[in-house]
Length: 128
Length: 149
Image (cartoon, rainbow over all chains, first blue to last red; front, side):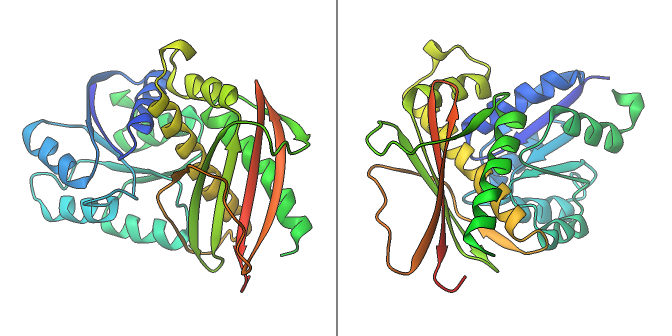
């Protein structure tokens, strides 16, 4: 099954990088979508079906934490798995996000295999 | 944490970032060349320890790393793309260094900013600095700590 993936990051070059890393992992991807902040990401999710969201935390307008909070409050969107990809790997921040419903947390820098393992763990091997 | 210990955090942090995110490497410490041209970026952090991390990278090296990061040929890159990659590199280095300084601490990182001129050192900060040879030039990492640290 091909995965539709939404990449949320305010840095255009980071979005390109994440797309490249996903390609390197060999995960079957149907559609990539991108958003520069949480608000834009919510708009995408209301228009298109996504199997997975990769999101940064530090973003303008609506940051990653607020984005995850809004997802959890939305019955239509709350089941979409979210993996945070961030430079901020402090224990307190990770714990808070996991409590909010985040399914995975990857600290930058990371190897492509780390992303693949996290996606496989969250979506199950039958998907990949 | 002593200056010597802090200085020893810079090399492994740079190795981690270059190897994992840029598919590149640092070849080891080298002399600082203050006259060399290059790009500078800075990221401030706050938490148990506060300060900022800055880098200065030669233009040829920045272009080479940006090409590797984006999977593009060097000729296809624009100036803004290279600048954004330098900011991302600084951001990741800052997160990596701060995580190694305070493994169980909580911290916040500001957005990375590209600097137009060389940063002046204020009286209430100390700086730990190390230059490294990398592909096509040098990269200097500076860790600025506020006076209370």
